[in-house]
Every structure is written in C-alpha cells, then in structure tokens.
Image (cartoon, rainbow, N blue to C red; front, side, top):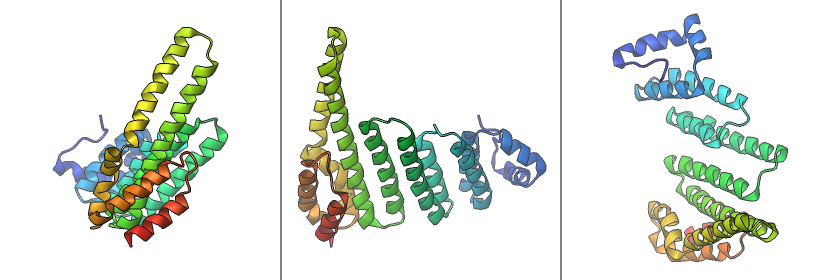
Length: 244
C-alpha cells in the first residue's frame, strides 16, 4: 500500500509535503515501489515536477541495491519519458546497460541469461524510440531484441545438452534431456516464419513499408543461421538498405 493514498482533493497536500521537512522524512521512509506508485498518480494529475522528485528519489534507492531487477530500472526510464524528460530517460537506459555489463564482469552469469537480459534492454529501447516516432531505429532494436532472445534460447539449449552429457545420475540426466527437448521445441517455434512475422510485422506496418516484409523476413532468417555469432552492425546496415 502506498504511503500517500488520495483522491484528487488531496493532491495539494502531497505537493506541500514534498517541499517540507516532514515530507523529506516521509520520502526517506518510503520504498522505491511506493514512490513510483505516487509518481504515477502525480503524472496522471499533470504534476510533472512533483512526480520527477519521486521518480529520481526512487531511482537513487533502486541503484543502491546491485541486485535490483533490470525491469524495475527500465520502469524508471519509462516514467521519465512520460514526464517529458526524454534525454534523461534515454541516458538512463544506457546507464542500465552499463550497470548490467559491469555486473556481468563481476559475476559469473550464464550466456543465456546475458542474452535474455540484453534482449529485454533492446526491447525497452525499441519501445522508447517507438513513442518518439523514430521508427527506423525502433525497428532495428526490435529485431535485435528478437535475435538476442533467440540466441539466449540457443545457449540455454546447449547448456542443458552439456549437463545431459556429463551427468551420471540417471534421474537427473533424464530431467536435463527433457529440458533440452523443451528448449529445442521452443527454438523451432521461434525461428519459424510465422513467429518471426508476428515479431516484426507490427514495426514494418508502422513504418508504412509492408511491401518490405519479405526482404526483412529473409534478412532475419539468414541472420539466424549465424547464431550465436551475429554481426549486429551488418544487420543494421542491411536493414537500412532494405527500408530506404
């Protein structure tokens, strides 16, 4: 439950609290999650500056914990964009990426988890760009997200295969075999034409380039054949060539 739960007539009370000593003490006691709930209410009431005070306080609290979920940090960027702080929102997305790479250097994170997280970040960037109507680069980031997620599935499948090969316990080995088969099945679904079309068609439609879908589909399928070694710079260049 949020610390401040109010109908519209109480919004001025919250605004006053945020500028008072009492309000500062409330802020210190609030969780980041509660701050963001209240920030949502303030944004809906078109009180951006007050909302920003809470969003930034929540951001600082979340950054103090190195284990904070990436999705929670991404939500900060989403709210900053809603508050019309577009540059700040984009720069924070880049900061999240840097923090994640730093975490990867400090910890032993499996490849499939690294790629799955990169996919989440790429999708967040795609959504940011979509809202800013920068559809060309939005489209590339959406495809990048799809390719990263598919590569994550490839790594997961291989991880189960390795465990299956080295496991001596028959019962545990059987579980790894089943998990690997499930991963293979998911991989086959993800690389199907139908799945790829669903993943990219909306973005093609937004850019008024529906006639380019067959070429884009061909590019994605060709790129998939190179997993896990994907040259994203080449993908971007080829996509720009197709969509021009």
